[in-house]
Amino acid sequence: EDPNGDFAGLGGHFIVLNTPHIRQHLEGALLQNMGQTGKLGRYPLHFHMSESVDGSTLTKNVIYKSNQRCVVIHGSHNVTVSSNVAFDTKGHCYILEDGGEYDNTFSYNLGARTSPLPPNSPLPGETDNDPATFWITNPSNHFIGNVAAGSRGAGFWFELKLRGPSAMLPINKGVNPKHLSMGTFQDN
Image (cartoon, rainbow, N blue to C red):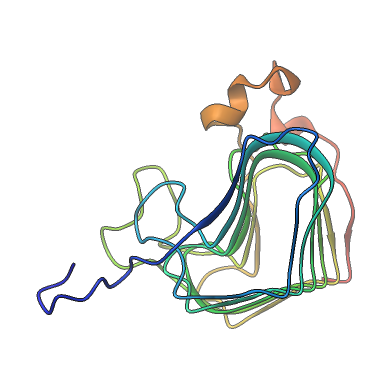
């Protein structure tokens, strides 16, 4: 809460939490003023440690004025993120969080006006103060026909590393994302 009694930077968050092998679908939602500035795991749309969720989709959603990030895939595989629009957002926008995410498809998404998080709000070790519209920690995913426009940082940033809880998943034992094959990267 700021001195005026406002809850600046404190919006709602939508998380799909630990749902292996259960298909999830979210379509056509407007997520405005979502996410919580500087709070780990509090993002507008977030698949969290769900492992394989083949057939899951996030499609045709609008993320507007996000307080922190946009669509976060974390420890989850086989999610399709397609035809979404994110505008006027803070921090990395469409992201693979820990480098332990495989075979996800980001297609025909738009991210525009991606700005840094406010000073002193990124958590230690995070790079949201120099945001990428598409922040990619594992190359073994697919990026097709996406558009990054007006980012204060990079449009697409491959920061290949394995860290956090994803590193503990059996699928990631002994894995270094720097040595993985590139998935599809086309018409971005």
